Image (cartoon, rainbow, N blue to C red; front, side, top):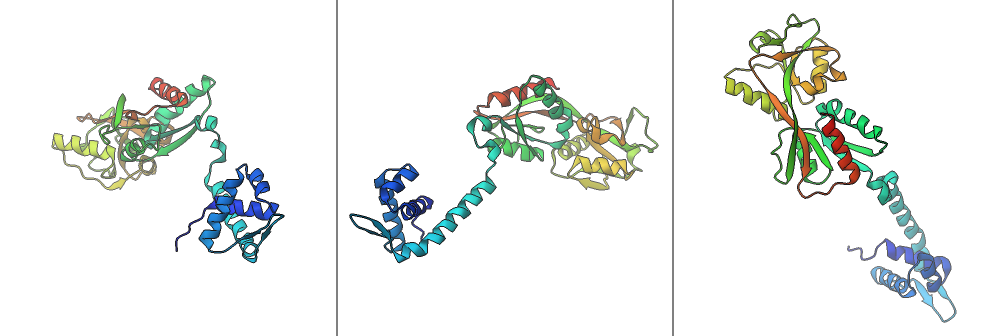
Length: 300
């Protein structure tokens, strides 16, 4: 069954029913009288029933109109409730929407770049609301490419053809060790020296794992891992509890989440991920978003 009427038709019907006049209904809804007449006629045609008896003196609702009233009111109230539930009222006005900046980022860059940048941004007296879309490097690229984010912070730049990558710095992969590990205090360790320690790696398919696998393959070094995890924060918790050693980006290892581990370099291997700003080609950013990008550049 096709539904050939809409909310506007129901609103016009209820206004005529309430006021008893097509003219008064038009004034109530700020429409022309002819528009009200068309909407009611459309509703009558869709329902295949007459809703009002029109005379020169009055507009009288039919029995069908009286039966329809409660249902029409319920339909419109459900629609309003759905709108209220789905809409973010805090950004309902255009001048406020322009102050919302959506940033897609890999979580390891939050403490390294975003938090310091916010400090600089607020110090200038500016204010903005952030929508942080944290996920994998691939997820960040997709969010920027599809317009869900104003810009992104990630590595592995060549993931989407319609994006532009602006390099900011090289983020080295380092070793996180439990505080009681016998290798703690060394300036660097080799993969071979970690052979007796359960090794925690990023999950296959993640940007960090791709870098690690490619680097070890070039060096001809076999890699035996014990645990894979898709989140660096999970790997840090495992290391902090003494479960094993993890290969993780320096950006997160210099942040507060790594307070329970010790850090050392990976000897003989220079594994680094390029970290940068990702923007959709041809996209025009708001002044607020551009200012925030400048603060991120300054935070490097």
